[in-house]
Image 1 (cartoon, rainbow, N blue to C red):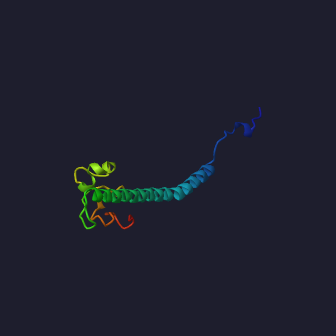
Image 2 (cartoon, rainbow, N blue to C red):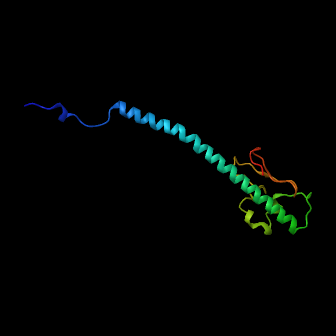
Image 3 (cartoon, one colour):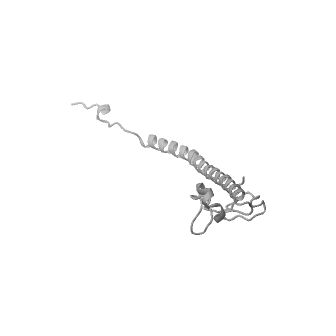
Amino acid sequence: MKTNLNQSRRSGFTLVEIMIVVAIIGLLAAIAIPNFVKARTQAQTNACIANMKQIQGAIEQWALENKKGSTSAVTAADISGDATKHLKQLVNGTTGGITCPTAGGTYVLATVADNPTCSTGGLHTL
């Protein structure tokens, strides 16, 4: 009885084919992962800037309602009162500081005329 070699072979992938697929997946991951990290950092920076704009608006609202001048000092407790309830989620109740989503920094408040800044670096400015 004659056996046909082509019929007795099992179909499947060779080692070379699998290595090529793994190399392609690795190449795609090497390209994609830095882009995802960059996008995440950019999103955190945008959230930080948006928070600072909200804080600045709340400071101006607080200054108008309390008849404060442009040189009046501002603290986190000042802008977290009843007039600015929309900022309650930014205010950390234990320390009174406002936490930045980027690297866990805090927002630095000075006077009514000064824009708030982020303690994590110069990337986050209004």
